[in-house]
Length: 568
Figure 1 (spheres, rainbow, N blue to C red):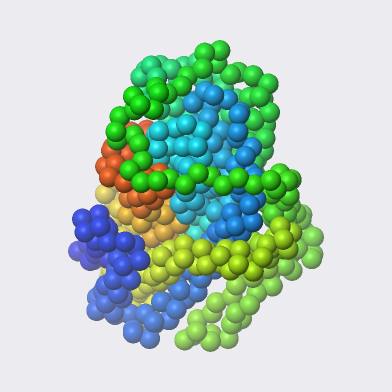
Figure 2 (cartoon, rainbow, N blue to C red):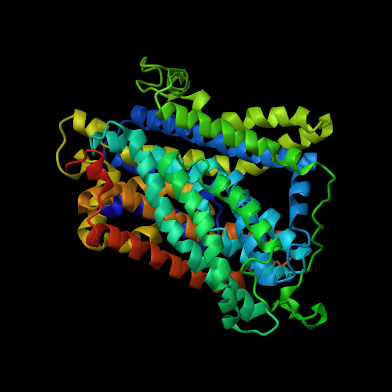
């Protein structure tokens, strides 16, 4: 009974966003309010503490928003300075083969954009670039969405993974008793990456196969077969870097650096003809295209720029160096970088926030690094006042919607997690002596037990489908997944990683991203067709991560939590 009541705010989010098509920025504030009412009326949480948890949730959300803001600001800065146009120019005359163009632009360049900024920017930048090299607009939208899956766990300099960790960090230290939560975060990054690395080959084969079958000149899925050696090469290069960074540094650079290195390697080898199929596959002439393939509105051509390519890439090179040096040096015990990480702004231990505390490691935030590099770029790229103003305007416009959803999503999770603080203090017993989050997790674990591994990624998919964001999906459900894993006796690191994977995979079918892709490519009205097309690769990738995780847990006996000190 109590579990059903606790699930009401989650069910409300699902109904409002799927049945009534409410945006996350409207649905989540209402669901937060419902969760607050339930916490006060049923769990006897005082109004005082409900407001306290809401404020603390807002502040936790603010930390994530700074990262999102910084990542998008640097992207808009490069767009306004002409640097992104210069980067786009790298793809001119690489290969006339549509399969190779799809992999280099749709997957590798899309992964770079996702790693750098996330939040819909891959479709906004990669899809028009595909159109400019001759892709039907509908094909460009489908490819940009399908391939924007593997990199998403580490999009916007690791924001989704960091959000998942921030949501469960308190539970990791309290429930699991693991003191080194940074090691838990690195393990989450590693196992999220292992699952998604296995998906690289599958999504490239399925994505290229769908492209060949629906849009290729021969209309045959089998046209992907000559590309398999090329796909294996791309996958090995990308995954090797992806896994090394995820296992040793953390989530911030995993997709970004893997994509940049793979981009230069693959462009070089492709120009040399390495593993390039002998027969070139193209599209039919444009006058033979189906009417649904073409734009119904004008799609602007990507801008051109004569900026030096090295200068264009310099901001990301600076970011990469700063993040790698600080993270590696801190892990090596260098005192200066350790102080950077431990220096905080906030309340200290004063209990200033209605008895609670909030402390932000401002110098360790990737978002702050991005903002500083953006300011340096203003001078480096000799931007005028109008361009700088435009970069900030574009960024604030993009972040506003995400901000409302994220702030109230975090606030709702904080209430879920701490609903029982007053009941425990009053000596209450029974279900209300446990938090709403615990009750929900316990109910799910009792229903599915060890089979919970099967539904974990689909919860992540649902969250992304509802909200259009892996970050918001992780904010909503990571705590629930963690509690369910602990209750079911499953490795919590791997289950939360599956949540992270599901949220990433769900990006290719979520309504927000599909609408953004159709608007960008001028194919509005094809949303249902795109979702139906992408449903198959979404399902296949979800099954694959379930299989990989199940092998690790039940065959190999891997339990990262136990390795980190959890003995429950």
